[in-house]
Amino acid sequence: MDGYAVNSADTFGASDTMPVYLQVKGQVLMGHKPEIKLQRGEACQIPTGGMLPEGTDAVVMFEYTNRLDNEMVEIMKTVSPFENIIRLDEDVKEGETVLRCGHRLRPQDIGALAGLGILEVEAYKKPVVAIISTGDEVVPADKPLATGEVRDINSYNLAGMISACHALSLQKGSSKMISIN
Image (cartoon, rainbow, N blue to C red):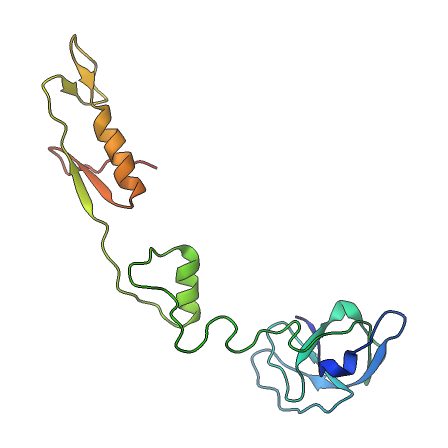
């Protein structure tokens, strides 16, 4: 959160009518490790995603502050320890299984893997299933019907079921895939 890194205990009891005043001791720059250590009664401006300086355990959002001058900020909301921050192991703990073998990858899974620095995983190829319709009366679905003939609806029905199972279907007598979206 954009705001001020604080020791949450310094904000206890803060409200619109009874604000807390903290001395501003610089700011955290995005992507840089803070070089300052805050004492009780001090705050530090921090951007969303910035690293907390030593001595702080929460962030008060800008919306609940009023910068009085270069040295003082008014805090108008109590924050709890670890409020508005993400802990180092909050998403995934070391040694925790993220995805099990055989899990079908979804877009969010690929994003989670990228967040862990994993850009390649072993995967199974989609199986290819051949569909063969038999019977002298069965004609392709795109051909006109003669007396006693029926269109090949089973191939399309099966192709849809195969697609729902995340496999590919192959039509008899060709290398043409049946695509069901």
